[in-house]
Picture 1 (cartoon, rainbow, N blue to C red):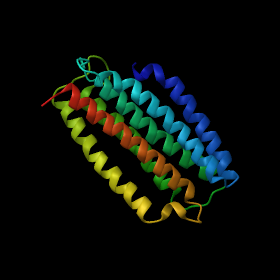
Picture 2 (cartoon, helix red, strand yellow):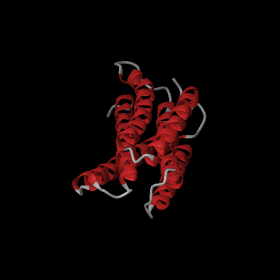
Picture 3 (tube, rainbow, N blue to C red):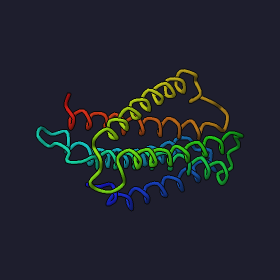
Length: 198
């Protein structure tokens, strides 16, 4: 199913997640904040599976790179959600952390970068290009996997998840968003491998 049909539901999930995150931030409720993040991530993963799993079946193939565009939209939506949570939780939720706007702006930039890269390499309309551009997009995806894994290892190993400061909300966004982007990237690489066997 093309992600275009899923966008209203995804947008609704993002809005609800952001609202709950702001309310949780105002109450300093880390469990509720984490639940709001997890519910959004699960919605993205559900759509990810609907897009990719049918292409993993033997003989399914992939006529064009629509799946890559759809996965790029999910990646962008995840970064966009992260930016929205950072901007609202810290500006409206009463949390105090001086770097929130920098990370929020960085996530917004990554949102647009994901869409721009996919648009340039495979296009935005069917038939989506599946040649050298798709191969380049998958190389960028592999680099993204490496970067996210390093960032998640650092986040967990550094003990930042147990911080008493107000950056706890940002750390939940980093962890949830990172794991979600990692799942999307891995699924993309699997789909590419299955539709373009060596």
